Length: 86
Image (cartoon, rainbow, N blue to C red; front, side, top):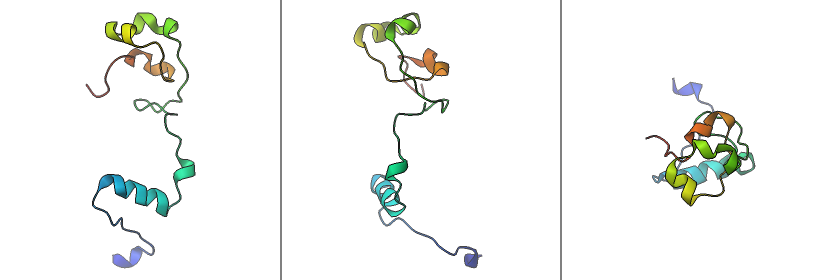
């Protein structure tokens, strides 16, 4: 069973954040990372959303306190102003 693994690597740190940094450094993954380009709910590409285009779909306090929105996929417009994983 152990002979099946020819090459392997084990993160040294017990801290999950440091393990992430170790993996990124070890496998040179930094150039492949592009944060905030995919929706966490549907994995769709993010597109800018104008507040006026979705004003009817916003939660009441979201309408008051936010003027700019991060890019959102078309499928997730109904998630505006709601906390993920409620």
